[in-house]
Image (cartoon, rainbow, N blue to C red; front, side, top):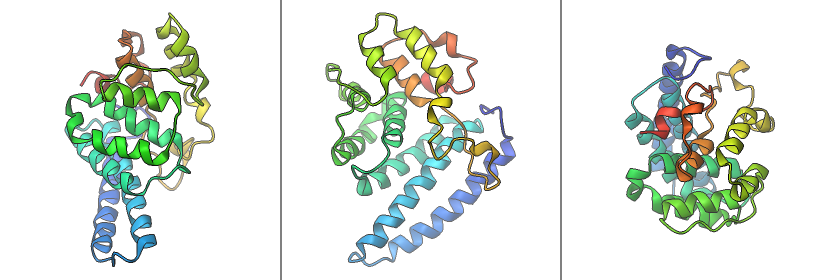
Length: 224
């Protein structure tokens, strides 16, 4: 187990429920007429969300990282077909951050991430930084909607800024759909993980030993 809020059985049940729904949605999608663009879009959005939920749940319950990775690939492959500039930047940041943490396998998913960034048409500094790193390009810092990243880009003490943001990360996401989901009666909780801080620690070669016991830091994923 990596999560400290729910049990392993809870996450197993969630994955079983999500994968059952995935099979139904994929069966419907495979039989949807190509002319039904709205139906295809809705189906792929739902499948991306379900696979992403499985990605997070697999990590939370302590599954092997290869299982998490297989769900992740499916999530971004569906999402790349239906993403738009109106989508939440936070979801895109999570997808890119997990990509940085699975960097050794990037040949399998980098084209999908590049498509996503192109389609959402965002010049946000954090998104650009994550993608530039995956593309082995020099980092060119731009303004981000996340103010801590703007401080991080200019600071000589990046570890301090990342530590401070990690401590405040959950409270900074009060408007997120998953905030307080551990208290939901609908079983929407899949774990609280700050993938972006782990990705930035890797990019800037920060010694993250200080984050080892932090409840939101995916330490073993950062070192996979």
